[in-house]
Amino acid sequence: MQKGNRKNAMKFIVMLGIVSLFSDITYEGARSVTGPFLELLGASASVVGFVAGFGEFVGYGLRLLTGYFADRTARYWLFTGIGYAINLLAVPLLALAGNWQIAAMLVVMERLGKAVRTPAKDVMLSHATSEVGRGWGFAIHEAMDQIGAVAGPLIVSAAVFVKGNFRSGFAILLLPAVLALVTLLVARINFPQPHELEETSESNEQSSGNMKLPRLFWLYSLFIALTVAGFIHFQLISFHLEKQGVISEAYIPVLFSIAMGVDALAALLAGKIYDRVGIASLLAVPVLTAVIPFLVFKTSYPLVLLGIVLWGIIMGIQETIMKASIADMVSTKRRGTAFGIFNTAFGLSWFIGSAASGRLYDISVTYIKIFVTLTQAAALFFFIILYLREKSFISPRTRL
Image (cartoon, rainbow, N blue to C red; front, side):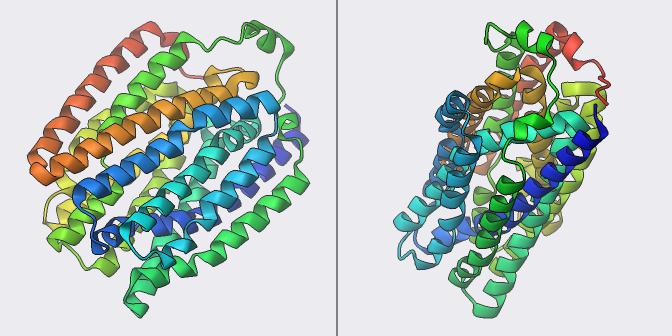
């Protein structure tokens, strides 16, 4: 590994991290209040759960196509730029939404932009992380990402507190959206060919010459899909907090901000652990996910807060190890496709789970707890299969 290449790789990771920082200020700030905003516009819990789930399905499901075409065209920067533009500019428009139908459309549009950009961006980022350690590289990016995710809800919370409505919070998010797009342009100018950051051996590429995705990839995707099916969406959690009056609506974004702060810290720790023990570090995901609904749907603030902390930990693990694992499993020429397929399964699973949870909430919270427990038990079963069959991958690695 060349010292100069490592330095440039880190610079690229940080620049994309800054883009993500401003982006998360924008859309995570908005997402922290879209649940109660839809509720105030007249949407039911079923509608909120469906919109949240469908938005995630679009945001993840379409990556099957965008990842494939990003690989076929090798126009990773083009897909990234278009996706960020759609993703970010949909948020300030929420300030103009006059009914829940328009607001729901913009929520889905924001997720559509993320679907366009994410596989291409992750492929470019994977080249750089190969030089600093997969887990650590993605962890640094995720931590910077989550700084924005912490700041965004706080900005929205302050705007709601001062102005007394959610629309002012959406409007102020235009500024970070513009800053993200400008920073992305600077990164494009400085690193027009990110693939040059990765020193891939010819023998490794030839060994993957059949272009087939490995069996491990499919087992891994199934395990993650099951864990995500039972991962309660924050929009439904925030709906519960608003409906039950657990805390003031102005403080709901603060809880989301706390979750994002925990996410950032958990990501850094998870990245280091992953670089030592591999995907065995994901064992904690189904265990902690199963506990969350028993806490966040309470009316006791301390229990809800504990549930939010666990929710943030799961997010940090998911956003770091999931991407690092895909980059380790799949050759460079198939990573966009692999990220796309993986995220389609992820999004479809989260859509089904979120829609089901929203419907079950309208009936009884008890049914949500049963649903989540069953999905996580199934996830643990497939994790055991994955572990027993693929010990060679899960064993500790020394990349640096």
